[in-house]
Image 1 (spheres, rainbow, N blue to C red):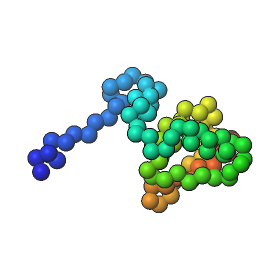
Image 2 (image 1 turned 45 degrees about the vertical axis):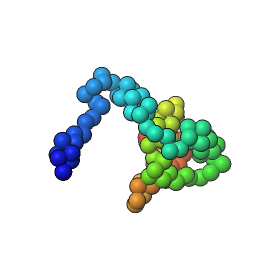
Image 3 (image 1 turned 180 degrees about the vertical axis):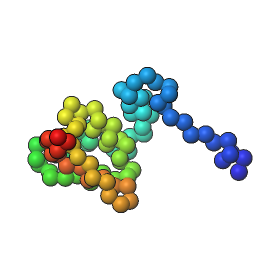
Length: 97
């Protein structure tokens, strides 16, 4: 019980001066459940229309997101959150306009 009382949560935001630096630090700390090359392959398949959508599991979400947000066209990808922590991604250029 004493251990739970002394457990503190913290944010990286106050420790860094920019979101880019925070993202880089966060990305480096992620234990990759999904390999970077696998995520990049999936993103390319979405881009090229080889697949219409891809379901990312809760376990792979942080790893996949780290690769996604480093893409030049990441705003063209649309994530739709599902029950149970899964997210379905599609490639929809211009959907944010």
